[in-house]
Amino acid sequence: MGRCGSSRTRAHPSDARAKLLELTERGWAATRAADQIAQSAVAPSREALGEARCLA
Image (cartoon, rainbow, N blue to C red; front, top):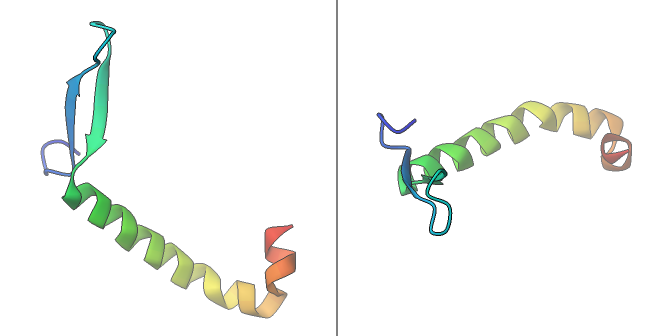
């Protein structure tokens, strides 16, 4: 993910052993796009089964 610019790492502020992974704007955009695709894929089942049944 870091190589394609979707994320970056930085040092943890209080633990020198740890690194924090952060999404860049490109990473957030990819996440939003994937979420939209997933919702579109599930939409026909939600419509057929009904919202309450899908959340159960």
